[in-house]
Length: 200
Length: 275
Image 1 (cartoon, rainbow over the protein chains, first blue to last red):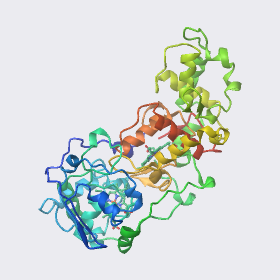
Image 2 (image 1 turned 90 degrees about the vertical axis):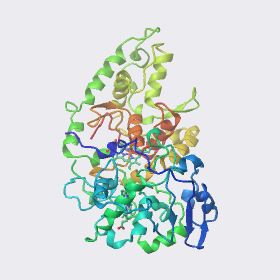
Image 3 (image 1 turned 120 degrees about the vertical axis):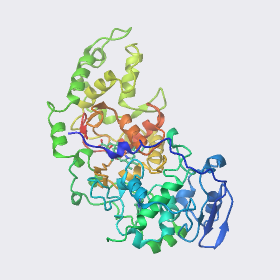
Image 4 (image 1 turned 135 degrees about the vertical axis):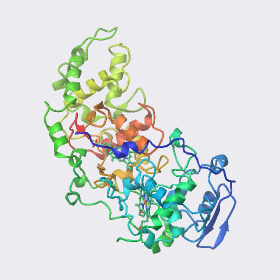
């Protein structure tokens, strides 16, 4: 009996995917604790963690990549409180495309860990909460930050940071300098999650 | 795969879900979470997470495809090779006696490299130094056959605590532990987050085992071949979208040492079968 093995397929996917926008290097991080704005700094993370503000010691202990060029391929975004209110692309995402991303274990990877309303998918994960009802439990801004980089909220989370290319170790060559999902894909995923109003 | 009944396994840690309101607190006061070791009595071989068909395949030598490698290894053991014109058997005699428990003591400290050496590495070393034969590559058919044959002689025996036996290994054990707990790759997960914190859960239908090295080398249905522990570790790194180390790299040896220590006292089952 040959087991279908999603875990090994995780590595395959779309190595050629690149974020559409080459954005300037500014990253704004609002520290909700101090209500201060740590702004326009490729090393905003490192600085923020020195402030003891954003990142827990677990993450701060990681060596942060300081390659500003790598950072440049990410669209800038501002964290306000526990969310990212503004669309990463400036336009709303498409829920149908978002569902396809979430349901695809090589692209979204979501159902490796989560389950959700996907009757056509036999094998779903149970490492994480069911996605049903996510759009009721969380606001658009909260969902966006959870996909972009949930570790800003919970440094111990096992959920991958989908829109982050610094502070990672030994990323395989095919993925280096690329976020797991592009800004447009993240907007699609957020739009889809917002439709998930029923459930637990 | 049939999911293994999770009730059978006491969970190491509770669900790690945090309610939204706690997030703000986590934001401020998050402390490093160090995965706790799996309590010794809760340890389970990867075998425990397999379905009945795969177990049956491992249990019966005539069904276990790795048996072919064992038989090939037995033949190689007796075959003279290299400039020295010596077979393994010329130095070690009958492997059924001389190699009993040998695999259960690896990785061990190697004077030549002043670090840990795994069973495959030792076989490669004997081949080069004592047989003066052309080197065997990692994952080559011959090396897998010889290591499967030698490892077979430890089946049913407990994994030795190599570090307790040789304190020189202690710093390498710590390095292995640190590697095991380091987040790596694009998805930024550590080995420990899956294998210490979430074992027994389903990764899209795949049971996450505890990552014990007791069955290697083994036959994997996914590979349709026999492979080493390093190949397995490489697979997990590729899954993490991390750059795998080169075969034989010190990182793999440190990890293998840590995994063996973590499995100390567990039963050797090589060559096993895995999905």
